[in-house]
Length: 149
Image (cartoon, rainbow, N blue to C red; front, side, top):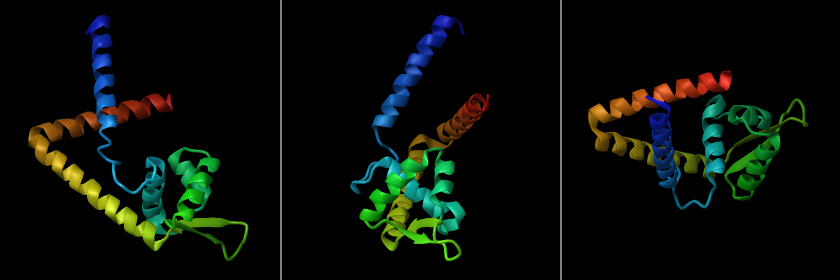
């Protein structure tokens, strides 16, 4: 490809990525929660197999500041999705975990996510879904390589 072709393909790719992002394929629901809050709850359910997590662990995993995590926790705690607890050994150490309401929300999110992914694979068919998987894997490797550089 020459430079002009690469530029045109880059524009087309950016347009396609923007179009996909606007569909809210993964995150659209009626919960009123922001994508970042839902992602944080999903993380709480999976990190340490759902055991309470220190906010600093979550911040590191999500690659965000502790202040951002504190904001998520405050918001989600007010809405009843997460709870805070102190360490029995050191009261200064705080843990956060999903409440029953939060666990129910994550279970519903997982179910909806699975339905959407299943539907996408069914829609694309075997050949196209295999190609999409291969391309997304290749993209992930490229992005990781560039971010490590």
